[in-house]
Image 1 (spheres, rainbow, N blue to C red):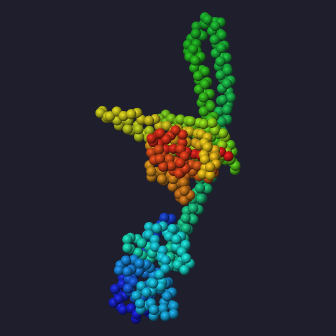
Image 2 (image 1 turned 180 degrees about the horizontal axis):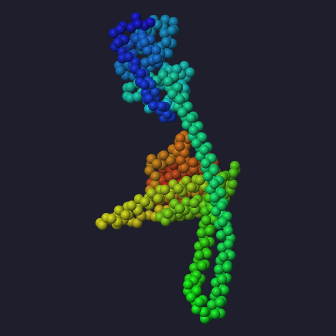
Image 3 (image 1 turned 90 degrees about the vertical axis):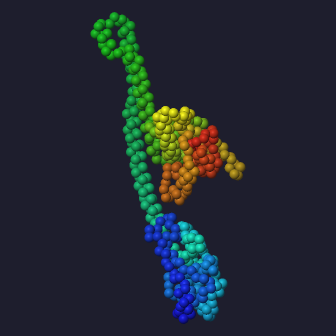
Length: 482
């Protein structure tokens, strides 16, 4: 149709359009525009409009052309805009025989210019926010300095909905996995609760009979002492039996043995009760709970991990009962304390290796003794003034360790995990704790490293007497008092 309007030598002077296939891999949530098929075609504004029309006729899938002036990018002209002006009265006479700059002066429109590293999801959302007359316009993609390509908006929309389909499928599979995991945890909780109940029954028998055993043993020892007083001269057989039974040692050791049994039974009873409390499923409504008892029960469950190298220091204030979901708070304390223990165990192992290495060196330089790994738990009743000037009462629980602290990258990673998007991709123990405190209890959850004073939650609050420590990590939990 337009061949007679285009000198053959002029058309051959143009570089033909090329299609960049993009990536052959399946699209994912973070896929970028560089992974989509794009067209590369450039034409100078001094070229005739008929030359561009001829190129469009020869390449029906080409969505548009990148316009250049002396090799510099000036804009884009789409197939749709060209045809729109050619079908107007006298359009072909006005624009085909004139340079493209004439047509472009009339057909210029706002273009969407995006970097090639822009995510497909973000690009599609920007394309959909354009005015209705520009929705079908191709998108200009810049992949390098002075390198521009065209992306068909329909290709972008198809890719966008493919990604949305992948997201929906992943979200469905993750929801199914979470439901299965929740069922498993509920079954495990019921199992552990039953085991704890079975432990408590025999422990109750032992505990209830210990007082009788203690009284009976004291009575027998008194009777034996009375016999010895009334019969100072015992027959040889009784003297021999007394020596064989080590009566004097038995008098000293029997009360201590009974006391040891009582202590063991008490610890076992507390451990079983802590297991029952930890596995307890919260009711629909929160109930008052003693936070100190919750923390102590978790410490008891973690006793096997609290080695002799790690000490726990408690600074408990007088706190009123707090209305909360006790089982969920138990999960938060478990996550935070486990995180602190992990950091301190790694530090203790590093210190031990360092000490062993120094011991092998004959000319080692003497150093100061390593700081004992410590977890400090501080609670207090705090009054906070809001921006409106009103005061509110909060319960503050600070769990701090003197470990190596967090790097800036680790701290930023923890902060990002608190976002809804990151939690949807992967739920970490700290992200779950953040959600329980903020969403379920209306509180605040702060993570900071004393190596890096930036506060993770950004609320600027500080724990008690911890600002002077030079290393370690702090977890602060604020719960509102109703």
